[in-house]
Amino acid sequence: MKIAVLKEAAAGETRVAAIPETVKKFVALGAEFAVEKGAGEGASISDAEYEAAGAQLVGRAEALNGAGIILCVNGPDAASLKGAEKGALLVGALDPARRREAIDGYALAGLEALAMEWMPRITRAQSMDILSSQSNLAGYKAVVDAAGAYGRAFPMMMTAAGTVSPAKAFVMGVGVAGLQAIATAKRLGAQVSATDVRSATKEQIQSLGAKPIFVENVAGIEGEGAGGYASEMSEEYQKAQAELVSGHIAKQDIVITTALIPGRPAPRLISDAQVATMRPGSVIVDLAADAGGNVEGTVPGEIVVKHGVTIIGATNLARSLAADASALFARNLYNFLSALWDKEQGRPVLPDDDEIVKGIRLTQNGKVVHERLNPPR
Ligand code: NAD
Image 1 (tube, helix red, strand yellow):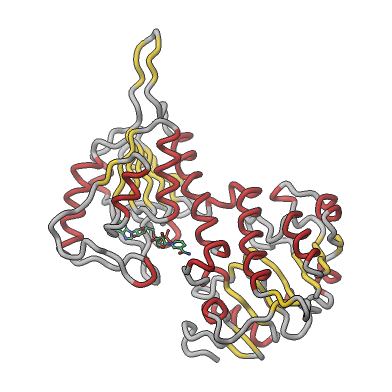
Image 2: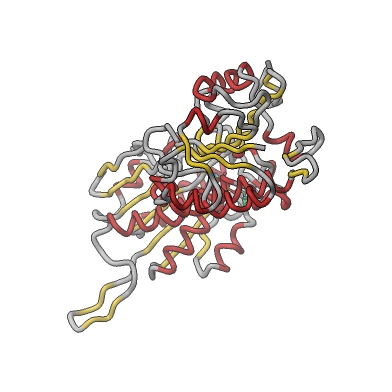
C-alpha cells in the first residue's frame, strides 16, 4: 500500500497531514510512504526529517502515482489527484457541507472520500477526532491573541509602583475550545467566568476553577441536542440569556466566544449595544466568526474596533500553531487508519456496517453514498 502526502494548496494553510512520527508508524505497518517535496515547510518539518523517517521525497505526480491512500488537511480538487489508484482513499478535512461539487468530483474520479470532520463522537473515535484536536488549540490561541491585543496584563501584580489588577475573562460556549480557553486564561492569571446552554458544562467550568454564569429557571436549560451538541434555545431562554449576559459583560475585559450549533448559523450572543457597555481597551475574540459570528460586528479574518473594544474575527486559529496542529491532525489520521488496518492484506479494510465508516464515507464506487449529502448521487 502506497500512502501519499501532498503539499497543501489552500491559501493560508500551514499544516501538513503527516509528521515524521506517523510516517514511521505507517512504514512499520508495511506501507510505502511518499511525501511531496516541501509539504512540511509551513509546519517547520524539513524534507530530510521525512526522509529519515522512511518516506520518499518526490514531486507531486510521482507521490500520487499508484497511491492507494492520499492524506490531506484540506480537500484538494479531484483534478489535481490524477495518477492515484482506482478506489484510493482520500482522507482529510474534506468539508462536505460546503464543498458538495468537489465531493461529486471525488466520486467521478473513482476516489473513496473520507471526511474526518464527520467522525462520530463516540469513545472509540476520540483519538481520531480532528474537530477536537484543532478546536483545543484554537481555544488556547484565542486567549493568547486576546492577551496580545489587550493593553493591560492578565495576572494581578503587586509591584513597588502599585498594583496591577487581574483581567476579567468571560468564555461563552464551553465545548472543546471553550474549556481550553478557560484553562489558558486561568494559567495567565485572569479571573475567569463562563457560560453555556448545556447544563453538564457547569461542573466542568467549576472543576477548572472558573465561575459558571447560567440562566436559571427557564425551561430548556438542559440545552443538549443530539450527540452532545447544543440545540437551538427557546425565545424565552434567549431573552433570559441576553439579560444575564448584559449585566455580566459590562464588567469583563476579555470575552472569548465559541458557541456553535451544528448545521445552523452561530447563535448571536453579544449585540453591538452590549459591546458598547464594555470598557474601552477590552478585547473580544469571536471563534465562531466563520459560522456567522457570536458577536454583532465581527468580520471573519479581521480585527475591528467598535466603541473602543477590539473584536477579533478568528478564523482557523489552529493554522497559527502549525507544528502542534499538524502533529495532532496527523495522529488523528494515523489512529483512524491503523485501527482499521488489516495486517494480512497490508491495507485498511473499511466494513460497511462500522459506525465510523458510516459516519465519514462520502463516496464509493463512483457514487456519493453519504445520507447527509442529500440526495446521494
Ligand atoms: P461546538 O463547537 O459545537 O459548540 C461549542 C459550545 O457552544 C458547545 O459547548 C455548545 O453547547 C455551546 N453553545 C451553543 N449554543 C450556545 C449558546 N446559545 N450560548 C452558549 N453556549 C452555546 O461544541 P464542541 O466543542 O464540538 O463539543 C460539543 C460536545 O461534544 C461536548 O459535549 C464535548 O464534550 C463533546 N465531545 C465529545 C467527543 C467524543 O466523545 N469523541 C469529542 C469531542 C467533543
